[in-house]
Figure: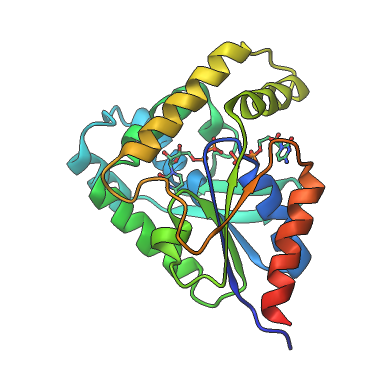
Length: 224
Ligand code: CDP
Ligand code: CDP
C-alpha cells in the first residue's frame, strides 16, 4: 500500500485552492478539508444568534457549543452546522464580509486548529486554508501556496457568480478580495503567509487542470 501523506494548500481568496484541493483529494482518495468553510459556518451562526464579530468571548463560547461537519458528496463538499446543511448560506455576502473579523481571534483559531488537526490525524488528507502549512499541519509532506493576480481572482469569482445566475460588480469583487487579503495577511495570530518550505505557484495564467496536475505530481514524488 502507498503511503498516505498530508497536503497543505494555502493562499489568498479565490486563488483556486478549494477547486484544485478537491480534484487532488479525489485522485488519491484522500479526505478533503475546507478550513475556510469552518470559519464561515461559525460566522453564519454568530449572525443568526446576533453576536457581533468583534466579541471574542461570546464567539468562543458559541464555538464550544457548535458542531461543524464537512461531508463529501457528488455535488462537492457539504457543510453541516449543528446538523443543518448550510453549504449555500455560508457563501453569502454578509458572511464573506465578516469572516475575517471572526477568524482573527486567538481563542477561535486555537479551537479551529485543534479540530482541523483531529480531522487530519490519520494522514491521507488535503487541507486548504490560510495557515495550514504554517500552523495546522507544519509537518505536511507537500505544501503549496497558490497565488494569482487580484484582477484574475475577481474575474474567476465573477464567472462563478454568472454561472449560478447572479450578477456581480467586478470592481466590488476586486475590493472585497483585496480587503480580505489585507485583513488575513495583517492579523496578529497565524496570518496568511507562505510557509518557508511551501512551493509557490502563480496560477494567474494556469488552468485548473494544470494546477491540479502540478500538485498531483508533487504528491506522486513523495509517495513513490
Ligand atoms: O474561498 P475563499 O477564498 O473566499 O475563502 P475561504 O477559504 O472560504 O475562507 C474564508 C475566510 O476564513 C478567510 O478570508 C479567512 O479570514 C478565514 N480563514 C482563516 O483565517 N484560516 C483558514 N485556515 C481558512 C480561512
Ligand atoms: O478556494 P479559493 O477561494 O482559493 O478558490 P476557488 O473557489 O477554488 O476558485 C475560485 C474560482 O476560480 C472557481 O470558480 C474556479 O473554478 C476558478 N479557477 C480558475 O478559473 N482557474 C484556476 N486555475 C483555479 C480556479
